[in-house]
Length: 163
Image 1 (tube, rainbow, N blue to C red):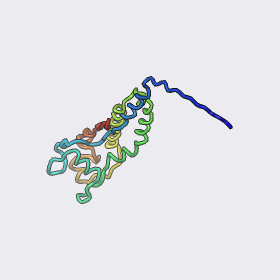
Image 2 (cartoon, helix red, strand yellow):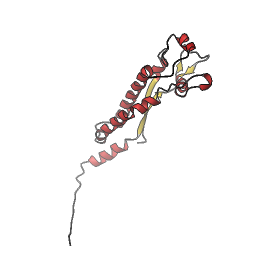
Image 3 (cartoon, rainbow, N blue to C red):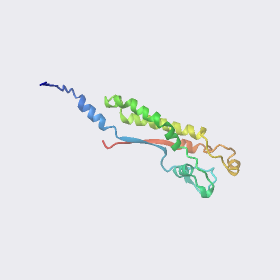
Image 4 (tube, rainbow, N blue to C red):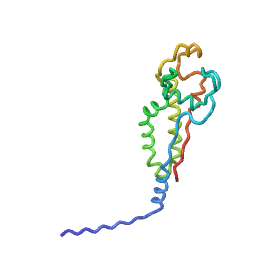
């Protein structure tokens, strides 16, 4: 017969409690896009003012009944860069649990990155071409870029978790 006896001792210097408290702070998320109800000022081909969020919805989903094609400048960017965002979170897990970095700081960084990625895609992405009528009105064949208001309206907010 083999007998085995094991003993262990926990010398808690407060690290375990710190680990638990920091792990509880991992909740939350970041929201990126055109948020709020700021009004688009002038210029467009519409007959009435429109807020930036509604204008974004028109571009993201398109309006086939009005011959406005889908020009989604948010979803493809998030999908194309999700590995970068996840990699950043993975890189920060240990510093977060050690209390060296807050989850708020991680979400803040990801929000800034995603905002910049979206704004870059608005300028350099491939979108359905504009109609000749729209090109004539705005003097450019570049979709999404006219006055710069929509691009500047891209923002993010960090939503804290329940703890």
